[in-house]
Image (cartoon, rainbow, N blue to C red; front, side):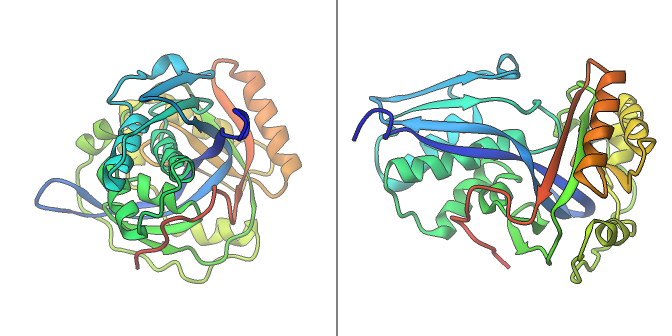
Length: 302
């Protein structure tokens, strides 16, 4: 095997919460959620190759925001997987960081899930799916959904994953006003009653139907994220006022917002318009896919 052939690369796509309801809180303080997640065409990338010992290199537009030390989630994922398999974590890992950090799009979780996929292939492991899910959940609440890598309804603290009903490919615009917003800060600010779980079983035939179905849902974290970062309001307004926008919403704990559009052309035009008026923002026209992700290696749990 040549050095080039030994490199295994896996994409780590942005995770978008199409809706997010906070349904309760456990005695240990963890919040219970119900969320519909899908994955975008924009992504980080993990590459792994054989090496003596474990090393992590980070490059890309947002590399400076991350520490490549041992507490990086990718490095932790590598050590946890090796410990489960009873092997030494010998690998050279490269993370190309193209997604904003602390952005509400699961970037770090997607990176960890991609590392589990890539290293499982590099080390030729056959770790049982339930053990992979346990590793993922121990790393973070979003990692199991990112490991699943398909549109899903996620419940509990992230451990209960069901396949989403049929969804269309959706032209989407992502907008981040470039103000980091740690998830823990938003949950700490959350107050008030919890939401009842909702039924989302019918799916949607096209983007118009999806926007209509989502109109009865919301992101329960949005009011608190907006209170901490008023810049989110400007991002949402920029998306909503774009011609042909069907809906705009905050993803996860923010500050990234998304808008659904009827065509790739209208999404691309909207992204160009927003980027031109806000050159300091991160703006991408992309698509939420029905089968985005790098392949299921740990399937549904419901």
